[in-house]
Length: 192
Image 1 (cartoon, one colour):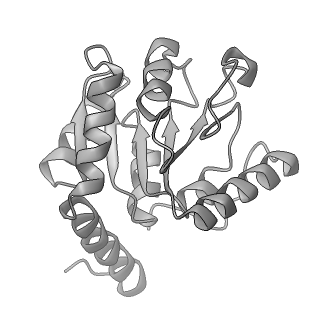
Image 2 (cartoon, one colour):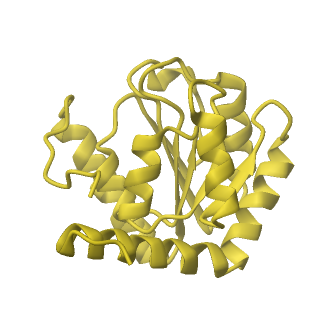
C-alpha cells in the first residue's frame, strides 16, 4: 500500500527504459538471474563498494547486474564493464524491480517497500544514514533478505552472499508471504 505502481518517474528517459527492456529480454532468453543494485538517490554512492559488487558478479555469466546510481554518479565512471553488468545514472526502478531476482540496496525504506511489492529478496548494505541500519536489521530479522556491511565485505564475500540467497528458498518464500499480506491489506483495509 506504500508504493504507487502508477507513479510518474521524476526523471524519464525513454532511451534508458529501452536499454533496460533489452537487458530484461536478454535475461529471460539466457535464463539468467537479474541483480539490481541501487546505492542511493539522495547521497553519492560508495564507489569502492560498487566496484566490489561489480567484481562479485563479473565472472558469473548466469547473473546480470543493473546498477542504479541515482543520478549522482556518471555511468562513464565505470569503464570496461563486463558484458553482464550495466550502470545507469538514472533508472526506472519499478520497471527493473518487476523483473529482478535480488536487490542489493542501502536500506532506504522506499526501495524496501518497492522490493516487498515486487517480491524481490534483498541483500542490504546499509548506507548508515537515518533509519537504514534499523531497516537492514528488520529485513534480516524477518528473513526477507540478509544484512551485510559495505565497509567490511570484499568482492568474494558479496559473491558468496548472493549465491547463498539464490540457493535458499526461505527469502523468496518470506517475501512472497509479506507481499501477499500487504496486498490483502491494500485491498481489504485489514492486515491479518
